[in-house]
Image 1 (cartoon, rainbow, N blue to C red):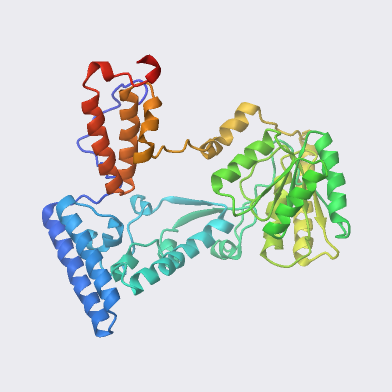
Image 2: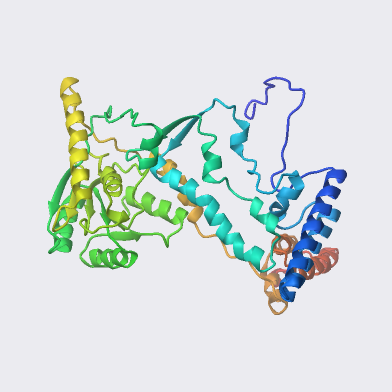
Length: 452
């Protein structure tokens, strides 16, 4: 047991897999190296036959270096690109993956399937496109294509018993299930889907400011959806000038940065978050009572029925939740969203009356918010690594002792080696050796001039 250290039982054998490298016996490795070299020779000849001498030289030089590394050290940079040779798989054979460890009758639950399934669809194509130029111009052997994700038809072979979980199932899920849908509309908290109001686009920003100030006065938060990143940035700036604390969120902000913004919103560091298409699946924000969608009548995937339902759902965690569509006409997507939301509201309200439930917003404590957004802590900037150059080396003498200098230099040497900057690592190694010899003199252990 990891805490009590008590034995939980005995096992005859237990597989321990390497985190990074393939581990093989010499006989299998020799066979793999022979196969790699044979493919290299065939590909090099192809380039030579087509008078592509640069690609031929590049591929041969790189592959021979990797073969030598594999022969001497057992691994090389980019070893995964030789996985077909190392595993003995046939060309085009599906790759091994974690799903292979499950029995044939396992239950496959796919959450947010309306986005998960398209992502699986696109994985193979994205990987192939990225590697196409690498193979074409002699950076990798064609067998690198076999180090790939599953094709979608290969992925489907694992779907024996599957549950698609989604508030807005796509056509694929509906087709695969034959329309067999189990609804989970009722919330034990009694909270209903938010009311949806449609307002004209004219003066939409002024109306938004008035609505936002009203919500902020109650201690609530507001989400605003725009069509473009530039619009999100400009609107956020405009809201700040209007006295409303606002920030924007779009695809240029990395995942940890997004989590940091969500944490700051929930902790009250600002009140309005403006985004494009990122405030959707999986966000539990009970502090948000208003979702405003600008230009809701524009056609496109950002204003499709599924997108509008998902975005509207962000206001469903607050008892005063409300959604405002700013539009001059009611599109089919808007009408479907309104009808579906009203259908769900009617069900929930009927359930509340039958069971005498009063809807209440479940507010989280600061500690709970901090825990649920803990990934944002990774966004804190790390201290910049010190780069001791020759002309700057004397500055290190301000440190208290040789031991601290040595510790700093050793860390820098290890980092340089990890980055394959071996010249710098060797230079730092020599300096460490000089410092260690220097520190053998007892009276020179303290390097602070003030103490000398």
